[in-house]
Length: 222
Image 1 (cartoon, rainbow, N blue to C red):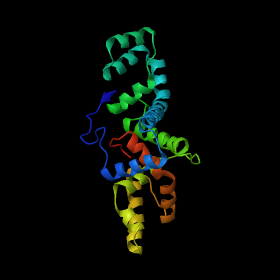
Image 2 (image 1 turned 180 degrees about the vertical axis):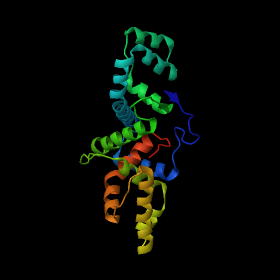
Image 3 (image 1 turned 60 degrees about the vertical axis):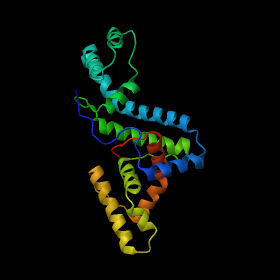
Image 4 (image 1 turned 135 degrees about the horizontal axis):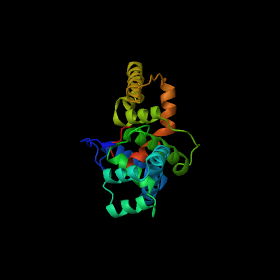
């Protein structure tokens, strides 16, 4: 297990102004209590990351025992007294917080455990789906990686918005082409969505995606 150098971009609290404006408008539209909503979204996100890590970590601990738990504690700079209580079996780690810390520090777990970025994406898909169902009270759907990538394209680029406001078919074709290229690059899988399919995905996921970004502002990989 090793810790990679934290990337220069992506500090907590940073968010593109346009995305922040869209998120503030949604919060006002749905009359959310921002502090309470942020707390709930953070809890869902930690839970999604924990679910992605839990099975693999538990399997490792069954094989390696306290020595592995000690190394995890050392890598994440956990208080020595608390590590000692873990090793003695007096208390159990708060796995959700532990996995979130590991993800934030870009811990690379050995063996079959997911990378930090994979855990982040898994947690984002999990959380965006809950936001859609629980906060926006819409039909439950399963969010996937390609949907996150498409929402990133729509919110980070102006091309799609310009194409939708235009009657120029060439601009509209270019927007569809570049959206599919962007999704393919991000997911490493071919994307061939039509304009109508992209619109449908935007209708399903744009609002919950924006709310996630506003409630936990960071430069996420998607």
